[in-house]
Length: 353
Image (cartoon, rainbow, N blue to C red):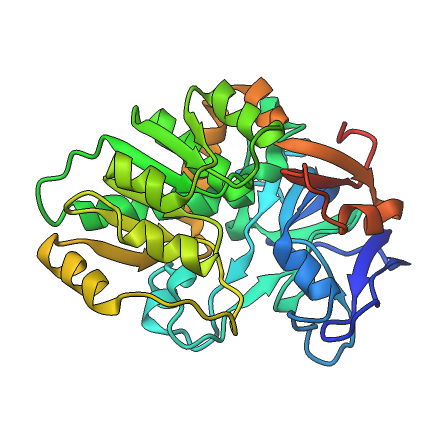
């Protein structure tokens, strides 16, 4: 089989290798890889800035935004040959910590978790891959050309769950949400907001193009003005922050409505400094019972919620998010970001159109 591999920690080592076909164990699925979503984490790994290879090896099979079709399922399992599936990214740590022991491996306390295509376990950028039955999730067949959006949808499914849990500490009836950043995470967060019947606003710095069009097609409102101006006017009940830009983060935090919840999903680049009025921010958070929470990764509960959200989404709208499809042999094109990109997809087989 062909697979996209990289030597983590070393720039310029990505290549397509011919590797032996994997053999599924008794409690695993053998899956034909259809397509793979590409994200910033993949680009960081290829740049040598992130990632860990499996123990005893130099190279890692890349990819965590999977989509595949079951080639062989064990008899008596909940899967059958031909099912459309994705593989879960994270695995609990071997100790396990209390969170991992309770299935909340997205909240691992000791950092000894592993992640497919990122940390110590091969990923899904291969023509064939295996996955444990307990870490495979079935998708509606309608999603065959957009199912690689599942993993980023799990991230926002978890974010919304965290927001709901925090809001439930008191009377909670949100009406307005501001999403900062119109990449895949931001747009999928907006999708889930519209599915909840909220007044959804999305902010990004571009003035027009596919991002603005996708927001409009969703029935949400698009903004490209400074976040302080937009949030200051809206006073949103919820902010989902998906840029990781420090100035955006703090301007959003400072301009929520009373009892506002800001959920941070964007990962900031260290070493960049900004000036803030920490006293004013602290005063507002305390006096208005505001909350700022970080959210990353997802567990099986979030995968199931994401599968349900995608199954109920408009397929034509989901297709808007995929702005480029690139065959595996031209992976370097997929890993090079372009200004109008939303989601770039590597196709692993002709079925992934």
